[in-house]
Length: 208
Image (cartoon, rainbow, N blue to C red; front, top):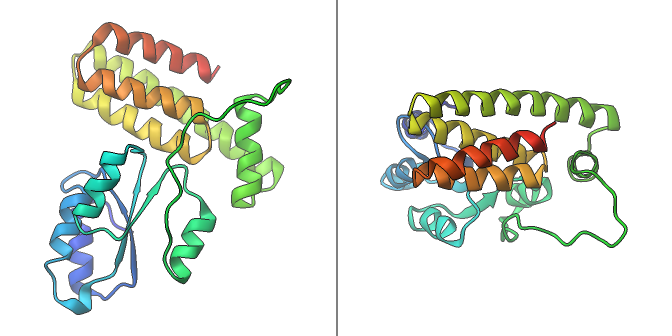
């Protein structure tokens, strides 16, 4: 495991890998540029490269593939897909979208997330609850940091905190939180301050 794209390129120069799970948004050098540079290395240093990203738009997938990546995994990560990728390659499922709620369903987002962690990843009930609680605690801190950065007019920090929140909550199957974080990240990028403040407030309510 490495910390950024530059280190990923260096690792590939030093060792032959079969598969790289490449984060797209990283400091120093992002995953797209890292992939382009790896594709310029000799053939023996050409692994399968799979994007792992919280971005779920068709354009994002196209950018990943155009950079030289072979596959695309949007968060939350489906471990059956990862296993298939390790075996023989995959065709990634469509990105996370809103799903219709069955009539009469009263399942909370937290309960739904716990059920998904148990079903798709294999956690025990208490393990899933503990992981989700720790996640929620961390996400509340990220929202506080984003609000503080907004007060300081540091848009880049706001976007960074929201991107981290989006990816982490998607990985733990907190769909509404991930979708709201994605929306807030767009407001930060377009500098729509009023909408961003409202989105941050709504995000905090989802974690109460």
